[in-house]
Length: 302
Ligand SMILES: CC(C)(COP(=O)(O)OP(=O)(O)OC[C@H]1O[C@@H](n2cnc3c(N)ncnc32)[C@H](O)[C@@H]1OP(=O)(O)O)[C@@H](O)C(=O)NCCC(=O)NCCS
Image (cartoon, rainbow, N blue to C red; front, side, top):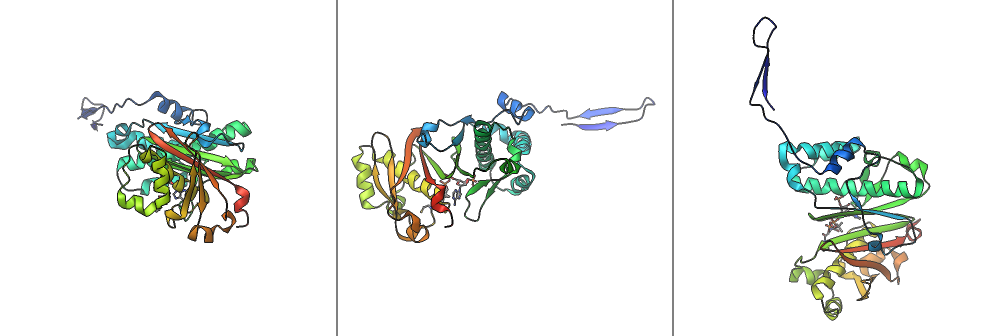
């Protein structure tokens, strides 16, 4: 940055820089590489697929940890704007520019989009040997907020790909699955669930089940993540009483949870009546991670 004056060539002042200031920011090398080669490089890492319960249906998942929030605040958010420009499709850039709020919230959102787009890229690379860039994969949120990957790549595959995103300030994850509906959720270990919240979302039986595991606080987080994960799978979010997403069991060894839909959930999703839906839960990077996948056929024509 500088104030600059330029004059003629007759001995008068030609250039006068005042207040010269160099904008220098050290960023992780992968950011440079990503900007130079957006169809080859990734901002996120592959998420271990065990976290999704090693499903038989094709899946891909991405994770970002240790996002350097400070770098993105500096220099009028220069690096944030640079990454946003490379990651986002034109329609998304408008949404991005209109977004208000703290830089940290917008960084979290942008890395959520990066994880989502890179999950689709990983999927297309793995199952279709095709390379696309993040900007080729706009993410559209429907009226309920459920994200869907769009873009020209869809003309090259007959597979329907479902997407889910979850983020905290420390961990940002996304996963995609073919021929299935997918929902993932995370909570930081140590998050204190207030008494009011706990009473609002869990039944007495669920609280007792959590106590029986011998580590009630973690079990409660697993249960809450499981409820949010299935609500994302069916695409509603927590629209009705979370108590009616009833935890039936938890396997203390595998962390696998079974959930049944009751009440208004069942009124909206009659096809899930009596179904014991499996949610995988695990500890990962200081968080509880839960994932739920249901066959797409359950929602066809519904
Ligand atoms: C949708 C919901 C489950 C998200 O969970 P969260 O813990 O707030 O946030 P997460 O980081 O886990 O997930 C956020 C992502 O969920 C996705 N999401 C939002 N609505 C969704 C829906 N209806 N279906 C599937 N996914 C959805 C979005 O991609 C969002 O990320 P983005 O805003 O960056 O695109 C939750 O916000 C919700 O249902 N809220 C409504 C009511 C409520 O909060 N009740 C709580 C106590 S009863």
